Length: 219
Image (cartoon, rainbow, N blue to C red; front, side, top):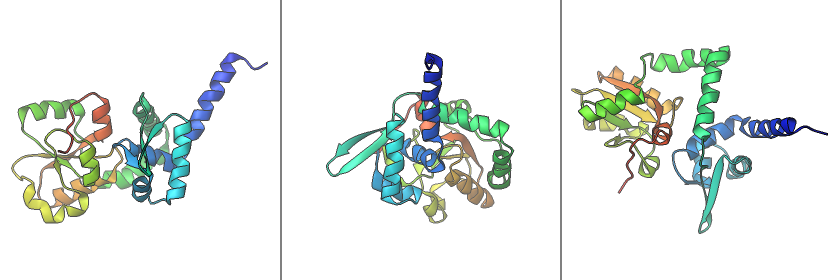
């Protein structure tokens, strides 16, 4: 007879298998920005709607996402509970124990931005002192779902033509979807090359919100 402990471990293993796919981890990053239909999630991830839906169904059965119907659309959102904490622990473990992860981080992300990112604690303090400009480089529909207080939204593809919206006399802190979101890395590299003082937030909007810090919604 299988012991209760082994039964528990089998359930843990089943949940680990649900997370054992790169596309599902990426979809969780997108879902964590706010509630989205499967069609938009497919567009963001570069997958077909059918493939995206299949991955989301796996995540739903594992309890990582929830759904609701809005007319003809099924909307997905991140489930309640420590989903982001679990993903953060996985990331931290990989960064510490995987040579391949460290090599990718150094060769790609490190070349775009080698400076130490701004921590949430530091940013909270600086927002109180009003000595920093917040730059949200996510698409405008993600910004509308929620953003850091007072942030300016300039999607990465609009950055070049909207430089006049950014101050050169004050440091800028850029953020996007999470710690490995390429949008903020590319924004930092582009703006730094043009003489702006800019750093990245250590993670992104979902982690800020999960920490219980203030967020704003578009009017």
